[in-house]
Image (cartoon, rainbow over the protein chains, first blue to last red):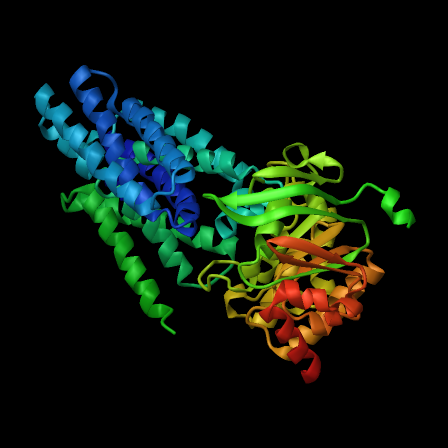
Length: 265
Length: 256
């Protein structure tokens, strides 16, 4: 462990990983409870459009990913509230649509290379100092917003209409939540990869729900599961030269299966 | 009556509501005053729930006006004065991670400022609401594990936690056994008499609560307001307005 942490790239990866595990699991609780799980997949694919633009045009891919993911989140929320479309169908359309756009951009720009590969599946080797700073800045803002409105978001997840009749600004807070989630997803693709981040957002909460405890304990268990999976996953990834994102996801799935078995009625 | 000079909590004037050309509610005018106990009855699909949703700003009227404490709904800010328990309240998602206390605390959310923890005032309001609804001993239980009657009391405790002046209940008896229902009506009457909480209650079960209610609204596209419910139950024009539902009420009367 000490040897692993003597490498600077591993220090950066661990800081980024721990921040992302915290952000993904806390925001994931609200996403799962609102039945928005598929949204994390869609936003992760939208973030790829940003990455593609960044790689081809020479901007910072992470920043571009944040911008495009937030934009996509707003479109989803707008479509969901303004038209009588099925939410999962909207998510499905945007998911494939944005992936198609990302592939075309990358293909036209001739950027089909290892760099793109690392954004798809995550790579701890590729986390730069600049990435860590970006994750810290956006991550802190996102976390503060989530904590400030956690009771309201919980109430909305429980019953949107009753929350509205209690004077809570449901529409505004729903937009805030999807914005924060979009930012967190875009930040996560460096470490976990855009094809795998959905798992880190959804599975810790679904595992925590198996323990049938109150809200605060569910959030804490979910946070613990995410942190544990990221730390164990990255360590295994370092020692056995495995891809970080995939290793983390397999860790979190193992915990999910264990939670299911332990709590079987 | 002197009560007429007060500003009503709800003031509905010539309200029409239609969806894609289909009239759901036609020229409804009514007022609900502080301290009243009002029951709203009517056949399924007659527009009872829609009326409540309009009163709470969850739907926009097609025509007409609705005022809450003398203000238009979009200008109304004091939502903590209103406690709403919707129809599906007792049908909670069993996996939702919430203890009884988590749910009742939601009643204080609109009063909270951001980043602030629950104040002592919040905590005692939550405690009081749980005591009033007799769910304090269940406070650490998961809501998904409770019986229908217990869940119903928890949902009302949540509404009471904001210390509302008016409680609106939309058929909260779904999935609740008879004994719990009887206790529940007694509790509503107590809240109305002792706590001076205005109660608006949607129900089919008018036979049971007729003794306590002050006024009765029948809603079947149009509204009829009856100031003496006992008289109303036997009045013939209600039968004409009501059709099948009137027979149901007669059956209830024989049963009890």
